[in-house]
Image 1 (cartoon, one colour):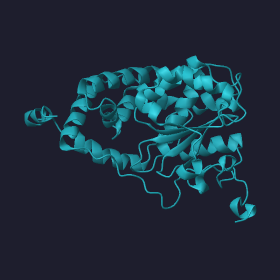
Image 2 (tube, one colour; image 1 turned 180 degrees about the vertical axis):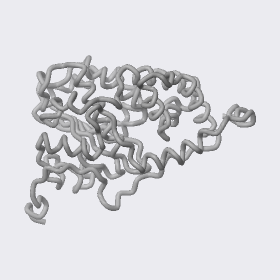
Image 3 (cartoon, rainbow, N blue to C red; image 1 turned 120 degrees about the horizontal axis):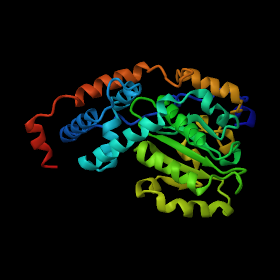
Image 4 (cartoon, one colour; image 1 turned 180 degrees about the horizontal axis):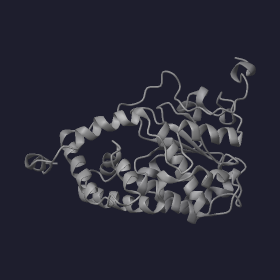
Length: 313
């Protein structure tokens, strides 16, 4: 195959759908006992909701009603209901302060001007790929950098195909230096957001082009990684074995010859994900259908016999 055939021409349009034929695992199938736990956790969360008069109430309820929300926290808590309640309530408090679903595009657009965080393509399992490129850092350390990352985490969730509940992160250290690499304090904040408030979202993290001089960075943050997260990090893996060539950036050995053009790229995702100027977005039909199916399944009142059933777990 010639180079011209492999790279038919550069494009500024990012990939927002998995490769044809991608097989995504079916939506997580819960046992009857686990469904009881989900109902109990959902009922608890409803009891902690903001009053309807609060301007954030509808957004909190929308997040809570997503079909995967209670299940994620129970899985992350190894089905310990009390621990899941604690973790879910902590995230509810964080979301009320951070408001991740109401980040106006213009607030964080400047952070995307160099493509230091980008969504583009899907791995073999249909996970959206989020590229982090510290070498392209263009702003000083600030809370806006965290909001920019969260904005992209929300967009990754928007693009997930049915049945997929996680994303893949590629951390590409090409051209990164001590000056552009994030500080340990910022890295800890990022880890806290991922591990505490986007539970079960990380499918795998692939670290490439890590210079020796920055190896200490991962040693410094290692104590703050929970074992599950640590096991998902791979250093210098064979990306071509994990990602279809048609979905992998040509700079990393793939066949997708993508040219980053800031305004075109940004506008594509604002449009594709239906983001309004105030940060709100139009719910897509697929999400509505999934929500209707699973919320109906898990929202029935918990009976005394059901409570008795969970005691055998």
